[in-house]
Length: 154
Image (cartoon, rainbow, N blue to C red; front, side):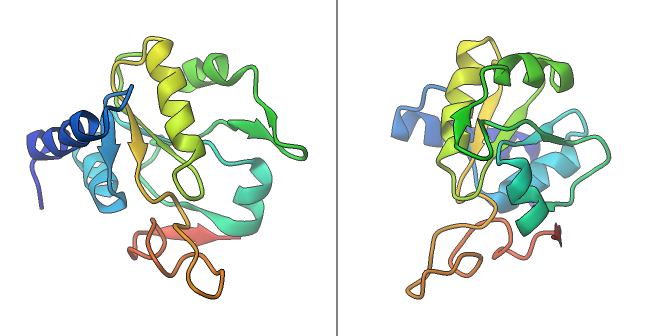
């Protein structure tokens, strides 16, 4: 188990190495640790409502999980109200980790949040389902589910 300072230092190290335009990035396991250590931190799932219904979602502490779509389903239309909806659940000074299926939309959400004044906007590396395996299936290579972290299926 890491300390909060160690987790934040790793996230910042990733920010520097990858020249990220937000506070940094955590692995799924680091994210789970952070949420346990800091009840003020929020995990913001930016997947569509359909993805939550069909795939599932992580289980974290009470009030720590927030769902704000980055794009709308159907059609993948950008959510023009993303930042306003985020502000309903997360204060700009709170640590916020963005998560999506495989860590693409979450990076975009972290950039948008940082630009909107969220100083502690982070990305969850690998996402909820992770990359596809050789057969085209997810949840077997990496990601929240593959790491064995708590989640509830659809």
